[in-house]
Length: 300
Image 1 (cartoon, rainbow, N blue to C red):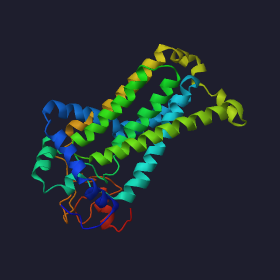
Image 2: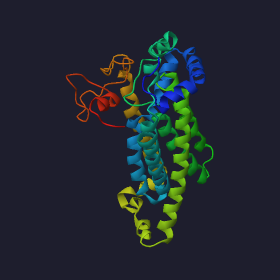
Image 3: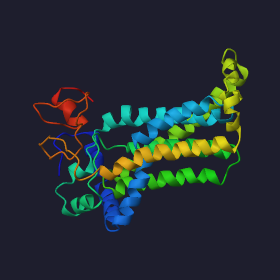
Image 4: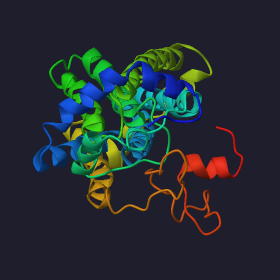
């Protein structure tokens, strides 16, 4: 279905239609209930319910000297990736989600419904979930690798790749969306790693930054046990808990979600921002972020 407004996202739709559709077809033909369940597991690693607590975890890790470089790298990587994707590129591209632009394609629509009819409330390009997965994965890969943990470090990019694939399998992103997310997330992770190296150098050698070298919660008697395996176990349990916080709500997402009330060049299947104080109902109707802003004359 053609979109009336010509945007960068519309140009991307037309330029990569054949490639994007072929990837949808590849994933659509392999759909089954088990793979859909697995896809929902992996997609949770890019959800904001996972990413935001990971920033908080990064702040905590930065307060322990032993884990400071892990925490600082995570913080920089997540902030950079989020800014590039959500603040700069998405509002610039204005690419509409595939479940809106491809509503008239019977095959795509059957794949979308078959994958659970999940929806988001914003634009499509690039994939925020993929960006998040790769910014975290790249950051951790580089820090673990620098610590000589070369076996475990490969786990993170594998998880990110699975998250990336899950977004197309679930039919909420085009392949070009997730490929751009991969690039942005990887760059954010790399830049975050080198910014961490700069910060550590400043903390080690340059006044007044050296003050931060004395901040180490691991020196406190009640927390000395964290310097060993106990600390690693706590971090692993925390990450698993954060993952569950993101994954469990996905069971209730999908076909029964309240959709945006917008009807125009397409019937918007974005999730409406229901009961959100930032996006109150307009004339008694609930809208997604995109159409709520349009109705209220707010520029992206």
